[in-house]
Amino acid sequence: MFDYPTHKDFGSGDRVCYHGVLDYFRNPKPAAYVYASQSDGETVLEISSAMDIGDYDAGMLSKCYVFTNADTVRLYKNGEFVTELKPSEYTALPHGPLCMDDRIGCLLETNEGFTGRKEKLIHKALSSVTKYDIMKLPLPDILRLLWCMVRYRMSYDEGVALYSKYVGNWGGESVVWKFEAVRDNRIAAVRELKPGRKLHLEVRVSDSDGRSVTVAAQPEEGSEPVRIRLRHRDMCDMSLVRVRILDENGTQAVYATTPVFFKTDDTGIIRIEGPDTASSQGCMTGTILRTTGREGTAALTVGTGITEPVKVILTVEK
Image (cartoon, rainbow, N blue to C red):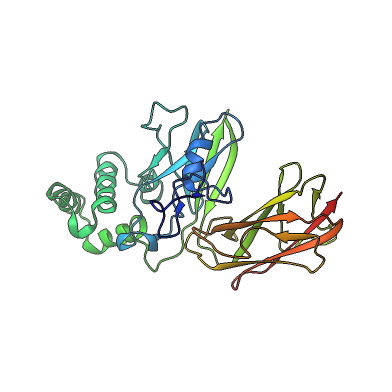
């Protein structure tokens, strides 16, 4: 279920078992969405890749998976419809992951005017380049490429242009990928993946009732700051603080392994029971707070060296 401290046979010397679908602070790892998507409740739409070409060999995207409980998922590239993802091969699951291995779809027909056998041959040839790399193409695919060039009188430059447009985009204009999850013939969820420019903290803090409240770095103008209510009764109350580092598109910055700092004010109303400094792993980390028996208002500041700090206001009642 979640990562946990254990004995010497786990972890990289830190004796932590990292087998969980959630991390120690209950932040969801990608595997968590495989489980979440089996529910028929709230719509789940999560992609197993940020679709950044720099993460892939030779800058060419390979297949990735979409975790969803939607009836179908539509894929768009820079606003143009590409394809509807085919049904999952994992038929034993209520909602198996959808494999996304075709990012060309109908674009050769809609953009280039290719139809029939010509579209099928060029589509298959470009898909093979995506799968094997241009320098490692199997002989049948090389022959298919040569046949396309001869049969349809395509020049080398035209072939390179198609390759650059639909397969390799290194140094080219950034691509915006959009996924639409459709349930009961309506769009139930949308995700956009595109290069980010600025990172920020997503801080979620649990209150006395166990609800997780998201606190923004900059509250909307004129709005009251979010207050997390805790209750100190015959025993202390505790609060779980969960942190993720995201870009402005809401995409997890999975390579952001920056230290995250937690600091309370000097009121003594709350104290940090977990780490006051933690390195984000896969852009996620957190800490734990506890009440001390005092009543009143306290503050927690969460910050890094690369993002705007987030201030959390907590109200403790006795």
